[in-house]
Length: 378
Ligand SMILES: [Zn+2]
Image (cartoon, rainbow, N blue to C red):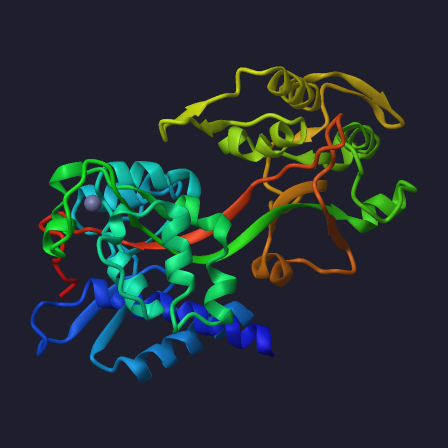
């Protein structure tokens, strides 16, 4: 119960901050806030119910704000990578959008986002002169020392996320926000660009019934080698059963865990603050040799000889059974699985015993409107 309350409150904080950002300049006019997370129609299940309760709580605190869902342009078959950008290009973007870690640099560099420094400082109950000149560690310490920071905020804002949400300002000396706030202009300075919504981690899910039928233990494979061995054992295309689901729509993203478990990295930040690709490594060769073998190496099991053990469909597709798949471990996972037939565990270890996986921060950011940084949603 306490946990549920904490989550509701942290979501609420998100809307309070964001609503302040995009409020109309005219205090008398009703304010309309189009925000990610506002349901656009009927809601279902525990998650839908919690969304409605959050909205109700928000409306009680802010009766002058009308919440609207973030729907706009929808492009069939296009992923979340394309749609928000098309909405921004068409000047029909919601005021509060969902941007994830891997997209965040693009949004910041293209000046799509509005800096939240003042709102963070107000929520924390601190006043920091020229806070844009502080590095991430110093800024984090000042915010966390704020008199309004409680356990909910601490849980929501762990140190690790600050390297992503607190980043270099693309405007440099010409920053309009520093000017607006009366701060000291600086070629290199930082702002906070996002409010973390929640953190999720990737897990390996497996069908307990398929494992049991094959005589495998009731657990995820311990190593990448065991994963391949079990996936091959369980593959039976005649029965539409595949060892592992690895959809090919975003293969790089879906296989990144193998790279990390082999000790590789995709990007690293240099001394100069710039991020560079570092996947030209022996670790990457090892990881993607394994991925290639999963897809393409022929093998023989009790059902016959097959060209690979991976099914490229999504595990939720009807008619096809996948013995294992990677998915985020979050409340949606628990809503959609039956624990009697589906189990989960950590991603398998690589050859050196490393177990690496992507930690994803779901964050939501107020967007800087095309026609001016303070334009409201009205
Ligand atoms: Zn700036």
